[in-house]
Image (cartoon, rainbow, N blue to C red; front, side):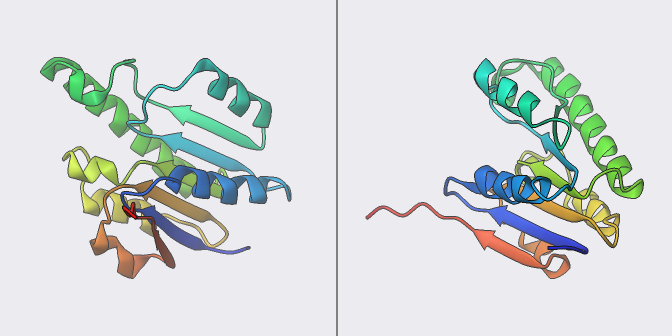
Length: 163
């Protein structure tokens, strides 16, 4: 795919990050530059960070949270600090989009920030508005954020079904 494209992967099902990352790796395999910014992602085993290091420079991973604990288990003061770190990540994402620093930008778990009141729909809209003519943007998270759907090209909702 070439040209501007905005895609949401949302829902309660698993595979949202994997789907977005798969699209990014596919684009990296044809010479595109990919930036993945993860928000409120559980700290994963050290091996996953090693994996991302092997994908550089085509795929670069950024995390702005500083605390190893989950956001919900932080003290109020620590949550305030973490919110500032997340806002720094959002500012970085906006800079990446405005300067067209990459061909593909994946904002992993950004939609969940709206449910926690950390980021507004308008702030995500401003990121969407900053997408250049040749940039692909992938947004993931459990929140459906239907208010954003009119501004994106494609929405994939993954749901968990009990069968």
